[in-house]
Image (cartoon, rainbow, N blue to C red; front, side, top):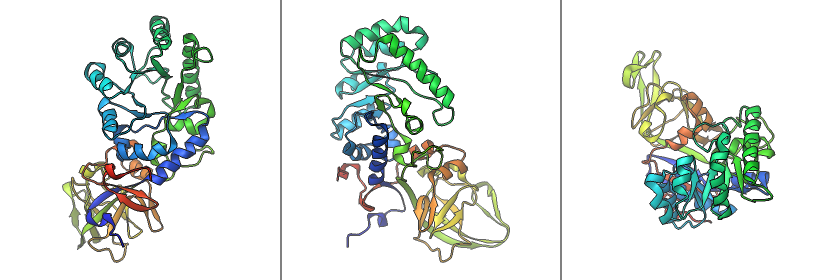
Length: 385
């Protein structure tokens, strides 16, 4: 029997690539005939951009989305030749890299329109319909519209897009944003006359209403198993993709009155059996989950006691029998009949799932699973199997 590669690690992240692809296929079925532009920025939401992109090649996406030229270059160095869109380019510092690696560039304002149009790269034009952070102003389409139409006629514009700010919570504002976007498209002649792909829907908009799907969608959090239990519509929750696990380093019985961790913010008034886990805030367990978080050990709930430390965390296993050093604690994922949801960890920590995922530390190896079996700990070893 092949040894389980997880046995060599004190803490790790498991990434179920089959679940990732199934989540993508659910979106594909939902939005057809629109194409998919999966977002693999922030190192594939913390899970490994190269491994994620290689797995998602199975759905034949229209392109991949990243935030910076450096992220796009990483995909190119790994041999990924598909279109890659850099959605937050810095023209003054990244222009050479955009051209060198054959990356598409988003135009997020007038300065970008002037500088990026001088490059030999496909352009994606962002319209600010209410997000307020980037994009061309719809109210000034008379000023910038002629240049965009000129670039469109020259075949330089690969898509026109916008970004919804509240697709999960405010249907009225989302419809208003779509109306603003459609007005700009009409002013530019985009449609039957100029068939440029239109892009607006993120994961929340994909799930909420087909009118937002347009020609392309750009799923993010849903692909990675986020947003479970947060959507009231008929579209199914995503499958979990991520598990975060850490070994028990030490188990000790503390007498009544004992204090735990920095600042002595927890006092074991009645005594307690505590387990020290090989994971801390340097690994991405939020510091704010101290005294609020809960993990699973041997399938049982073990609350965090005291403050999370840089390298270790203490949990209470008084009600979990037979815990011993070497056991595995689950911070996110399934353990027996118990499930530690990513959303629960985020909520208990006063943050969002995106921050938990992208904050997973670099010293935690990403272990990639196929068919439930750990296949690789290196992105270079992950193929489209």
